[in-house]
Image 1 (cartoon, rainbow, N blue to C red):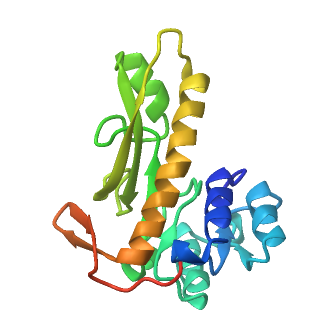
Image 2: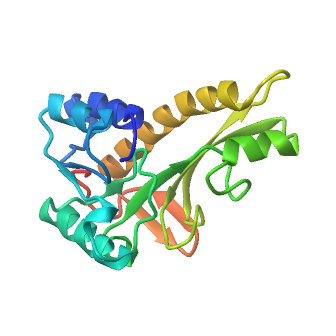
Length: 200
């Protein structure tokens, strides 16, 4: 993660229920001193940090991240607020779940909320997807709509989207953990197809 960890906190809260079906084996970040790491530590979850400046190249950082993730043997990697693009070493080794504050494929990239407002849409939302090498281009797992109100600005709209996004992420991770999933082309179906015991 890269920031305050509100999505992480929602997952930490969810895994307290044994019926949820998943557990968090570790939390990783790309910088020290962030609230997300503190949230994990307070919950007794192991943490690690891999900073890009600590490596000679971005490729070396990608390899280091993949190695750290592999130490914890997750069945699913969840990018709960992680603002760096993961490289092939991690994406090739693990299924990686990510979120985006718009209804993809519309308004990808770092300014999805701002771009949706500027376009004048009346409905936007959030997307949970399996990450790939592109920017917000992976197969879509789940989406939920959020209405745009007259008078919305980027902040008010984003706050409403984030509230919906947290619930959708928790629901999606739990269903994937309990039911498994398959990917056929760009279609993701959640159902009894593979075992998933823990997320990291």
